[in-house]
Structure formats: C-alpha cells, structure tokens
Image (cartoon, rainbow, N blue to C red):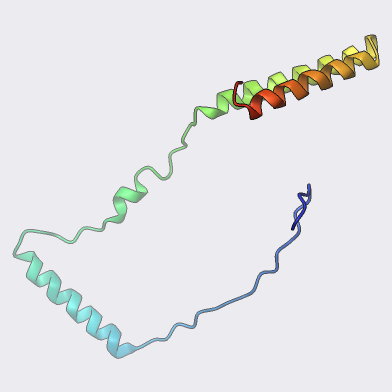
Length: 116
C-alpha cells in the first residue's frame, strides 16, 4: 500500500516506437480509389469538405470558467484567515492558535458531512 506523500516520485517511462512501413503499391491504390470516389460523388453535388473546420473553430478562444472568480475569493479568504491568525498570535498568544485550530477542525468536519 502506498502512503500519501507531498513529493511525486517519477515513474519509469519506456521508449516505444511503432515502426512505419512504406508500401508504394498500397499508397497508389489508395490514391486511385480516392480519386474514383471523388469522381463518383461529383455528380451528386457533394463536395468532399474537410470535417476538421468545425473542430478548429473554437480551439483558439480563451474559455472563461465560472470557477476562476470563486477561486480568487477563496484565496482571499484563506489569506485573510492566515493574516488574522498571525496578528491574533502576536496580540493574544497561543489562544489564537487554539481557536483557529478549533474553527479549522469544525469547517473540515462540516465539509465532510456536506453541510457547508
């Protein structure tokens, strides 16, 4: 059983190459069949259009997620709590650390119970 750790241990990676074989006869047959299919489809008024245009259309736009605003608010709340603990420790002493530990434990408990 693996224990949780703060540091990642590297996993060994193996270099695997699939060899590609060039078959000129098969490639020529593929070109001819594609040309014949194009000729047959040209009578149907259907032009072979690449389907990749729909995939590329929205790829370069930056997507804004709704979680970025809540993440920055959460970071500000955590920073405010840490600053208040530091000032509380400087002015009150160990009592501020005990209060912070009690509140943090309560919040974690409520989070696991899915109340908060």
